[in-house]
Image 1 (cartoon, rainbow, N blue to C red):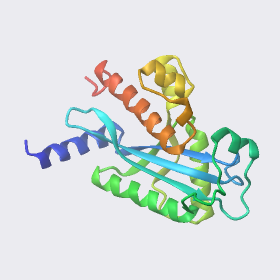
Image 2 (spheres, rainbow, N blue to C red):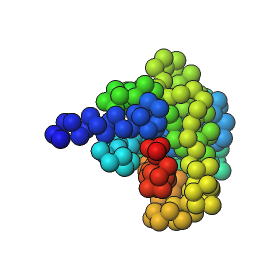
Image 3 (cartoon, rainbow, N blue to C red):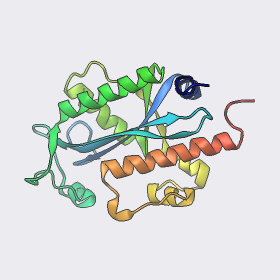
Image 4 (cartoon, one colour):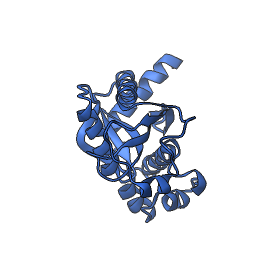
Length: 214
């Protein structure tokens, strides 16, 4: 089998594995819990790939800091929790609309490459991240949001089933994934650890004979 044939085969496996959906792991760090009013401060998206043996792994990561949208709310408690200073003079950030446009295009390009019809959000407590994604998309009237509007994969639920743990750091520990608490609450770090956890669960299920169905 040529390298090109192997790539095409692995892309087909990924599309088949998730019913033509491309799983994209997302983490947002925000200024509060209200997706309609509170600022998004950071976002990261991790796109996985699948090899010819059906093994899932991290392939591509997108991360950017975001300028709070005009009129947005930022809770002091949220900043203390994340350690983010959205007004630091050396902070490199872009407008929310620009960041989302770039991220959505990256996801759509990956969908095309991997022969998937739509993206599905993967997150740890996915409802939270999904709500902020949808709110930003509506806020800027972004017509080509690649994510399913309400369906998602929640690694808090999956890790509760697989490892008996629902907190990200504890689930990673149970799965044998290194987790540094001092780096947590960065969108890039949390998204990549969530992606590692998701891949570990999917691959373990495959090893146990759960997929492909016999």
